Amino acid sequence: MTRVDLAILHEIVRVIQARAKVPERIKIQKRDYQITYLEDHRQRIEEALRRHDTDRVNMLFGQLTSKVKYQLMRQSTTSQKPRTQARAPGGRSTTTARSPATTRTAAARRKRARAR
Image (cartoon, rainbow, N blue to C red; front, side, top):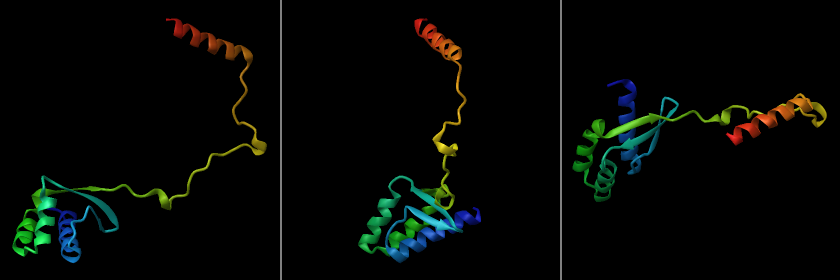
């Protein structure tokens, strides 16, 4: 088991004990992780918390290793500057004008393609 795996499991247990709530996301080493609980493990933990059954909660904590999967969330793009489209001064288009012959040729190609 890697350090991150252990840190995630410890953080899940810490959050459950502190808040009496099963987390969906946690933050470890400045990274957000999405937590997925296999089978109905999440419901079992929540039910044991509601009943204040510490023995059952501790047993379910012991099974976390095999019942939890996690996925690193993508970094949010709010810290990056939004990209704006560059425009030519005076509102003019930056595309080059096509000659009428080129436009007619492209239209003829489309018409032939539809006919096939």
